[in-house]
Image (cartoon, rainbow, N blue to C red; front, side, top):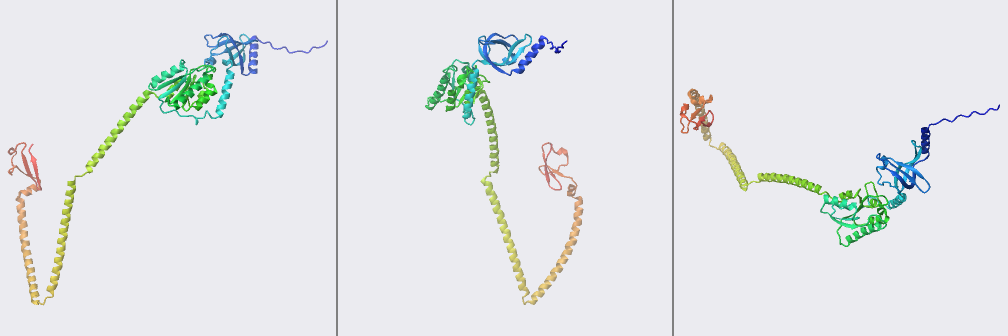
Length: 449
């Protein structure tokens, strides 16, 4: 009998395993895709996730956009809306249902607008219009501001609210324009040119321009991505601040403007000083100035006092000069006396020499005898005086032993009243009396307490 080949039996899968394998196959085969269609059956349960069907004239597919992705979207889907979405292909295993997991969505046609935005951005970038060196600095203080925006939009309300709070003295000139629609870009350009023309003609005195509007979709903001608006901002002689949409929105106008405000309110804060900060700064400066003035005044007073101490009355100088003149006169007299003594000594020397040469020998002999006699007399007188001195010294010692002065030398004193009477008893004086105390050396004036 012929033998049939034995074939392997394929494995048996559960429905869950099959759906899981199919999901893995789909997710591994497809990368992120852009898909365009119309929304139907839109649902937004309490979980925060979005579920809807994307369809065109030929087919439809289920879509899911989870909360962690849709909570940052400014666009809220609605039935009948034509959208373009970025997604990955997957399969919902629980129902075996083919679906798209949406990462991002936008209005249909936004892709073309984004491409146009990028082309213009690259063009202006190549021309250097985004360079910081080209842009003009804002004035240190904006007194008058031109605002180019819709007169009925939220942006002008936000700007005025901030300026009233921060700097109510700033003058605002509104140049009303539509901020979306087919004519918006041309009218924004015209408003910028008109403000510059009025400034050049002296009709207005603006310090800066603010071009602004509130948030919206890419289509809503498109007027601020037009090249004519960008060229008008670049050509403006007045500094231009652009604040278009929300903080995450960046328009061509923002890129070419001299400054960008993340929001209309942020731009108003950028252009206006906070009057409370000015008041606080003024108070700080006033306090600093007062402190420095006090320091300067103290320094000036010290210098004035120093100069007063150094300044001497002319009478003092005259007295000093007079005293110096007296001193010089005394020195002159001493010098004259010394000179006279020298001359007298020389005269005596000359006289002695003359006398020594005199022929009167007898006179010299007598003079020698006289000198000898004088010497003898002097020796006798010295002996007599020495004896008398010894005796006088002995008598003085005896006298000192009984003298009150010796008592004073031992630390005692003699008290006398104003009339010179010696005080021997404390009863002889009363409190307040003035006494003289004679000591061994000097006197003291005492008051009885």
